[in-house]
Length: 224
Length: 402
Image (tube, rainbow over the protein chains, first blue to last red):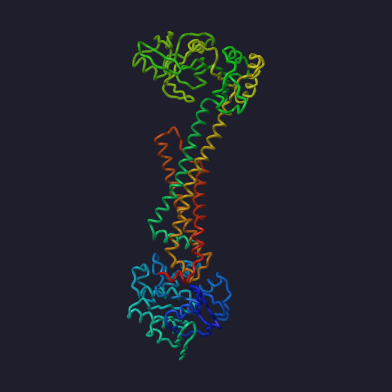
């Protein structure tokens, strides 16, 4: 369960006050499939970063699974991120010198999980995501779609409760986009909460719940 | 992150930028190699000099005319001013002591030696027969100075191998008459070619009886008197014997300097140890320079890998973990560089020994530890700043760069 209570985030850019989030309250229940859309600069990325604990609000409260994470320390936030949150980025952000398998195992590696245990968790994912023949390849030897599948595998290997995707198809062709969205929807059907930030209405409109953000406020929240 | 994973992660990072890694390893290894090699040379020089002194025998006591009031143990006394000469009479008197083993007076000078129109300048030593054993000289042919009273100025000489070659070529020299400074003198022996005693090349020496040398050089004074104590334990007794005897003969003035091998050895040892340390310190500066290079390169690496560091933070790595990652990369680099440097340093030392075996270029153990310690220390300290910068990166901004 994700719960934002009157959350605001204000940036000061060139002496001007920019309200990236202006008194936003939002509840996302487990297993939901939510898309966040809106024009550039509307604050949707800030909203996603806040949900992912990369950004902390200036005011308001954020309850993640009942725990108030607004006042946690840097190290505690890192700890929560490593356990509960999976990230997917527009530019994949794979480590170029690591193989597909190593990239997928990176969150476990950072968490101090041993090599054997990592392999027993990454190999089924590689198979499920159709990457078993590419597991020793490095990112530059993979197609865009394959790279994003590696990134998704990396985002879910530590079994997070929520998957946050920032323009996951922004850098992919139409065919690969469809592939990736199908994969994300599959994960959602298996019970994972999915939040996608996108420009692409075709992607956004597939979500069951569609939130539109304008000027740091929720303009519309279409629930099924 | 487990230590093994941290190392693997750092290795993969180092491997992904080979030129950068190579340059840093080079800088580090040159620094370490310099420390190892320079301390090795310093240590070799120390061992060489200590060895030279030891070959003279450690129960040897040297009596030098003149008194050095300050720092009586330093080599500076070797050139002290002489208020009153040390004479053959003094040497004879000194012989009467129960602590005295062998004794030999020495006079030295620079004179010319001639044989049938061939002439050359030579260092001349006037002494007595015990000098052969005291100075470990080797006689190749003929006989050495006769064992007789030191006041007898018998005109005989023992010549060095080089002097022999230059004056006589292949001809027999034994029994021939040469002229030293115009005085006729019979060659009775030829010295062996090996050996160098305290800087004097035995190949170029000419040795004559001490009284004859005093006549040739027109001097009463001795350069010094070498006395071997009966054994190590009697050295102190011998020193007392020397002081009292000389004081008695020099109207109550004890105007000689007594040098024991131990004290000279200890002084040289101290001087050379300090010298080695200084040289090591200078070489250590190159290590610090290498450390600064590591800092610059790590700063660049952090800038290049901003996105990666941001990603690791997004994936749950805390500040501490990011710092450990960066520092261990630098530490790995400086350790590898250090090991490489040790290899280069020891190879250099080995080569030096092959080319110049007299100088046993062996780096002391402390230098190895110090070089490695400094290498790893600088690697660690100079990577703290880049590591802090990495740890404080804002993951959102870091990830925005791609």
